[in-house]
Amino acid sequence: MFSAKYYQHVINLVGIILLCVTLSVIDNILGLIVNYSLEDEWISLIALRILEISLICIVYKNHIISIMGINSPFKVIKELFLGLFIALAGLGAFFALNKAAGALYGQELMDMLQLGGGQNKGHLPLEMIIAAIFIGPFAEELFFRGVLVHHIQKGRTQLFSKILYDLFLSFLFVWPHLKMKQDLALVQQLPEALIWTCCALTTLQLYHWRQSIISSWVLHASANACLFSLAAGYWS
Image (cartoon, rainbow, N blue to C red; front, side, top):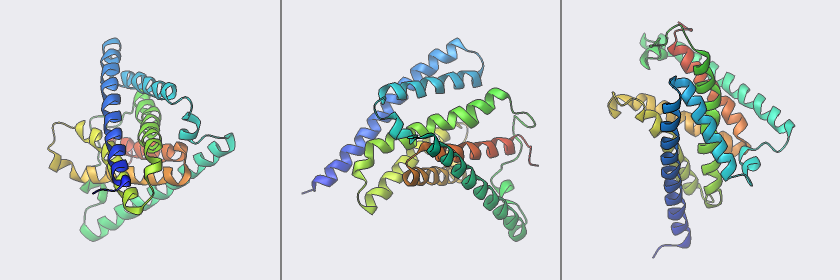
């Protein structure tokens, strides 16, 4: 009734879900241990992300170089500059859209998306910068773009399966970010969910293209740096 490829796709998706659930349980256990040991929220997050990266490196020790796409120092440098170039181009496009929205609708895009100063206005602690801009994005790229894609690479042969997998992987990335704001209804988070989905799809396509998490990590880190600095009111 169904072809062998169909069953292979189902097995791949179920395998990804089980892997995410398993790592989520491990992550929660590690989080409880770290949070119990360390009082500072950002220091705890740094420790947790380092543990996650170490765990992935141990489990995938035979494939970690190819997953990261760091076959040579030259490739690492090239991917760093490529990620930075794309980040700067994206930043320029965002500000152009921001000004265009202000001219057309009388309200800039940053105001529409409520990207103003928040609780950390005027202050970005060093531990927050390390956790949210450097280590956090690296851990997320390593798992969501590296490990998961490594598991489904062989199943992505047709255009439909590529779109399906990319949307599914993007959903897995976006969902935990939305769960962080439990005080808001999901409907209220739709604009932000759309932004996260676009970011996830962008970094995912960049990984497919370059087969390296370095460029996607730089892009991810740059996006986080922009969002956190906006939230701190540095650009207002």
